[in-house]
Image (cartoon, rainbow, N blue to C red; front, side):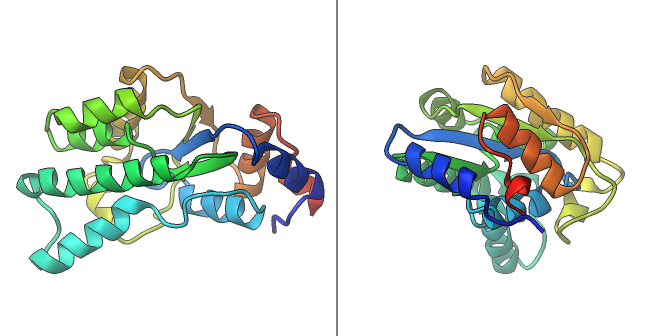
Amino acid sequence: MTTINPDLSAALAAAAAGDPRRYVITGGPSSGKDDLIAAVHAAGIPCTVDEPGREIYRRHRERLGRHLRREDRREYSLEVLEAFIAEYTGHTHGVRFYNRGIPDGYGWEGFFGLRPTPQLEDATRTYRYDTIFVLDPLDTFEDPDDIVWAKDREIRRVHELIVQGYYDAGYEPVFVAPDSATARLDFICANLRLPKPSRGA
């Protein structure tokens, strides 16, 4: 299990007094993102607690009594965008990892055959992240709602649309190969020149 590395804690404390550094962890369904986010928290790195879109999706599903359809997406997407912007603007100092980022909206809108909203395009220009880490897909589902996105073996298509959305937004993502959550987090921290969490285990 990933534990807190004192060298990593010291590096995060030193960065906490400086400008915000924002790093996104994203990928399609079945990417191992939940396990990696849990490892980020276990390592003591500031990070999104829960993916904003999932909780908002569940609220909409409960209200409608069914899964969202194409015609429901606009209202849902704008609410998710507001949550992403609030999280972004609420972070003012030091390192923070994000469980998905604003440009993820391009991928999900594209999956449903919708064009990006003006609000999404404006937010993408205004709120910029420092590095985007894209998790390559695994072979297992992490959340029951993933089945909705991945029916008919659409996992790869969703993944590719998300990646393309970040390219279209002007980013050059860093791809993280399938591996254990600990190894993936070590890779990410090494990329950012932070001490590897596993060295504190």
